[in-house]
Image (cartoon, rainbow, N blue to C red; front, side, top):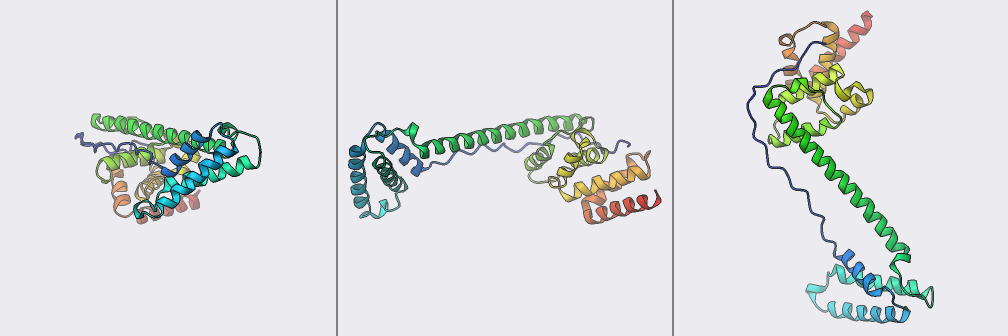
Length: 255
């Protein structure tokens, strides 16, 4: 398949500020439960019962004040003292040990899984930003067409579009359409091409489909002769898809 990537204008495009990673929101209820567990560690049934009565007294006092009526932390502390009291009452003579508390251990495991998932998301976000910087530099050098796409470049395209204030990056879309049509980079794998259908916008997919059929129709076609494909896909993606399907059907009928 001939080279079908339109060269860029070489102009430097300003980048939008990168969004800071969101901070984890404060959870008063979680804080309340952790405070109770620290206080209860090593306590017996009597000590927990006394703490429970104190928490109930505080709750009654708070209920008299409107600004304390929605105290999530206070309610969580009371509920946790009640749970621990029931836990120790079911095993007389034992002392509270968070390490032996199935509820606590389940929460810790869930927290660890959440933290791991968050770390993976942050790493992926950093990878997308770095790859977007790389593609931006290649665009400015006029050598983007010499680079093969990698897994995840669909998300990188979205990042470049975000940086441009939402405007479609025609040269990047043309580069990806060419790669998708010619099975370059990670698009050598059928699974990657199938996944692209749900990750890339319809005009780009229509462009790729049309390029695929035109390449079969005229393998030696040059870049200038295919410039209409990008314009048609951008302005009339449904028509471009229909034309690609028609060409594919015609080619199948004549084979």
